Image (cartoon, rainbow, N blue to C red):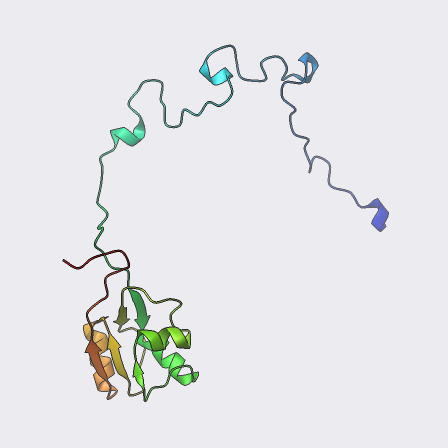
Length: 163
């Protein structure tokens, strides 16, 4: 039985780091494992992706895809999420549910270009929604529950001008 003052690590659990460039007896003295002369023996060398003159991999591979600079960033909300917020008393089903109401209730963290309603989940409450976009299945489910969907024009993000 060992006592608290006798606790120690297993043998070989902690290995001391190699102190490079600390004399010939250390085994990593003189050049410190950097070889002799040349660019990489000096400090401040970063030849990332350099393959000794061979065409680097990142240039051998073809370019793919593009980044759409006009793409809008949507807040996506499922019907199930809206129903959960109504049941928890965070959203008022009798009032109009729009982006501001969803942010105030904590369903959305922050307002983006607009709200896109997705049809996954089940909606039981009669809700009047004012959103930028809704999927066909979402619209069907909302109307089946007795609610309505009003589609708004998406707001262009800050810094963009409408042409």
